[in-house]
Image (cartoon, rainbow, N blue to C red; front, side):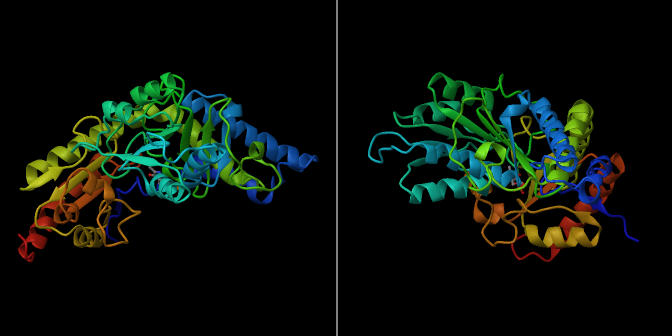
Length: 390
Ligand SMILES: *Cc1c(COP(=O)(O)O)cnc(C)c1O
């Protein structure tokens, strides 16, 4: 059988076997409803609260500041709509935007903001530089009298650039503006402390950190008021009603516990592999370029462009060789429009279409990097041989 190498961890990760093991009893044996008063319910509730502590521990929060959600998308929606809809009074004509965000946010943030624009709220989408960095000065200049929320992602899922969120958070704090960050790509990879980083709301997704899909969490700083997202039985402080997904919650908790234990080790391992991969590819393939920030980037992200190549063909050809990677990002690669992130850093349509994202994970080895280093130059050459634009 052909060797299979998975280098698409920013799209999703495998469930860690320890996470799976932790979850299993909560399907058929300890299946209780966490709201029930009997022992089945109490067992579920105890497991849920233990998970909440583990999540809080990973980001320097208190357990009462964590609510469970159905994933990163839902956390972003609850945070942004929750804060915004709480603002019953707003003045569409007054100066300055209500919400400040960036042009390179995940669709879970961008589309939520676009929706709020249809409801009369003003949103400013800040541009980024060619490395995908948001400028703190731009944020400062955009703030107006009516700005009540800033939402800037911690790291970009496409190109891996890590944003200056500590400084942005500080600005927001000084002006009494709430600061939300989508940290789906950084949780477990980069140290996070919600106090030191001045964060009021932070989104987490379980399936990006070796937990199960369909689970997530939102950190809400004590005192921050949100409008409910789902109305019903009043679960999760009334913010998100629905019987809790206990296996998912237990899995997310375990994933956070492991992430905390392994953060330094994982970070070193990924950085080493990433740097080796970037060096090899740039050295061995002519007219290859690295996108995203050269140093201030996710430890597991390598994002390239190869002149004359069509990213989709590259992904499919690599798949035949057992290498699973992505063009731009998994969210946009089924559409024909290139990633909004690549356009925002100033790439042309053709350049944006020639990109390839490799995102490493815990399971990747030096041998994997070696294999990709051996296979990729050859594949690029073959595709270039038949490319009309090379
Ligand atoms: C994957 C991802 C999301 C969405 O998370 P889901 O759990 O899949 O809904 C949101 N933001 C970023 C940056 C992501 O990478």
